[in-house]
Amino acid sequence: MGAFGSVSFGEILARGSLRETDIAKLSAIDARQLTPDDVQALFTLHVQCLVKDAGWSDWFIGIVSDYVVHTVEPQGYLTEENAQWLIDQAARSGWVETRTELDLLIDVLESARWAPRSLIAFGLSQVRRAVVAGDGPLRPGQPRALGLLFDEEIEIMRRMIYAFGGDGSMALTRSEVEILFDINAALDKTRINTAWTELFVKAVTNVMLAASGYGVPTREEALRSEAWHDERSETTPEAIVNAIVKSGLDGVVEAYRVQTPVEQALSRLEREYRNIITGEDVTSDDASWLTEWLGRSDALTMNEIALVDYLAKVPVTVEPELQEVLERVHTAA
Image (cartoon, rainbow, N blue to C red; front, side, top):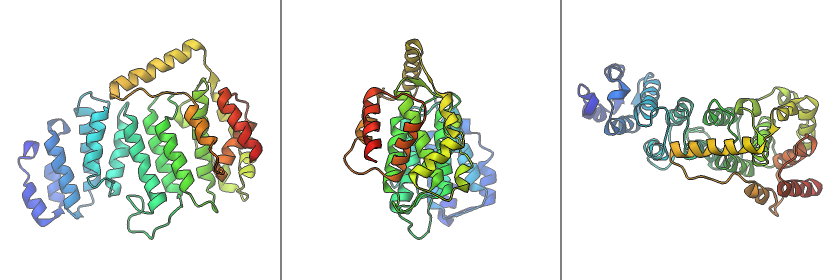
């Protein structure tokens, strides 16, 4: 079978287990020797062999990620087509079933210079599934805890968002932020996780300011996690926002700056070039969808109130239509 001529896949599948000796034989193969059929065969082994040696996950993640990112053209990047192929392999039932497959998606995001929006959206949707359905790769075999978001899951989202941004200063995309809104809407309204509030407020602020003509810092700088929320006893939106401002964390906003028309044009060209490489459709970067979301008639969640309060206190000027909505909902809140 392709690069795995010395390995009997039929024998492995018949016994239903992957042994250390099997992995040793497979490890002799270089990712550059693989074909799409070879990688599909590896996914078949992963899915059908219920007993696996402890070394399988790391090896499997490493070789598949290397193949997808550095063997398939264009090397170093993922196109929309290649990302969909990976999703189809990693989620044969429509959903990622194991943590190994989720860690593979994260590794690909971290290894690729650029990847399409569909891949980060699919990765973040696994966290949404944990919150909404209480199952999936992040909640294997656990009692269903609907409407809850755990600290580890927040850090996984942060890791994916950082990875997708790459080394440059790339604002969060609509695809990412819409899933964050979905997760926020699904959370238990009687509880609040201040680590999530911080990430949510900073993420939506990032996309709002980018849509309002600001040049953004790196995602690591824009969304960095702080220790202030670990010491908070009050968890009302007002208390959280006051803590952010008082502790000086709003200094993150100082890393944003209004771009000149030339800089805005260059930013658009960079996004368009990225879309050409990944094979994605160009999406609008205006703020209209944000005004619709925040201007909806139903009541804001506590985290959305914290967002609106935060934007009312930090020295920024957002797009006029968006500013009007923020002022209206801030007054109503």
